[in-house]
Amino acid sequence: MSQHGPFEIWVELEAITDGTWKEDVEDQFCNAIIKFENGDRIGLNIWSEARFNRRPTELFWFNNKVAHGPDLIVKEFTIDSIKATLRQLITENNWLTGRGFPAQED
Image (cartoon, rainbow, N blue to C red):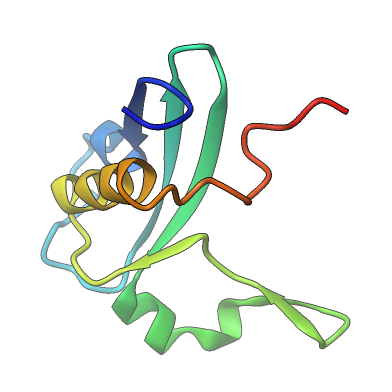
C-alpha cells in the first residue's frame, strides 16, 4: 500500500489483443494508469530505454528550451516489469510525493 492508499495498475499493453504488440521488440512505449481506492488516478507515459535512446527527436520541445518527454523510462519493457517497477516506486520510494499528486486543496 502507498501513502495514498491501496491502488491498482493498468498497463495499456494488457489491452492490446490484436497481435500488434510483441514483447521482444525493444523500441516501444505505452501508457499506464494508477487507480487509487478513493477514485484518484494518475496517467503515465512510459518508454523503453531503446526508444528513448533512438528517438531523441520525438521529444516535444517548448520554445526550444524545455523538453516534454516520457514520465518513466524502463530497461525491461514487459507488463510484469512495468507493474513491479511502478509498485516499488510508489510503495518503497514515495515516488508520487512532491509530484502534485494527489492534488492538494488550498
